Length: 262
Image (cartoon, rainbow, N blue to C red):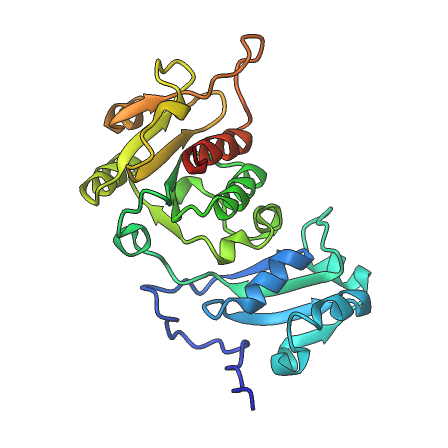
């Protein structure tokens, strides 16, 4: 007999095993984002609203009976009213609490040559961040480090673009990126900043080193202090007629280069 899962609608302030807990309620929408949240034991859910079609899709993945009063049948228009204008919810949304806070040493140690850490330096576009999460999950990255005050909540359009990856890839929110790079170096990571002007190609990086891959915002790139703090800089070779890649595309290429086997 299966053990009954705890009430996902519990709004107590107890932590789920990771340090700290944010009480803010957020909306996740889209089928994969919500299904991943319901499968994550660290995620506290206040309510799930779903159309009949979405509930039928969700049933093989989640026992709706276990959700109890947390689950609320709804019509598409009802869900539209709960979310920002234009949100593509696919008939499914969940009001949730933020995930418990991850700490850098817990999320990034031990340093593993096969699992890079991705560091985002003042990247603020939700779609790009979500796509980076999805790429990080696809290439087995260990965690993602972001600057807390520059990063939007891990919800909404960001979570939908991540397709569930925010539930599986730890996210470390830090105050200072440069100091975090120093901390990663002390854990054994080679800190590598992506920069179009770098003489070294990403493909030439040694694969036996744990890598912390540092990416800057489109246009501005890495901030000077962050670039100076990196142990080395590397570039993705692209055709001369193109100035740069979208940051999420660059993340996919770089993570593939770091994970590809000879």
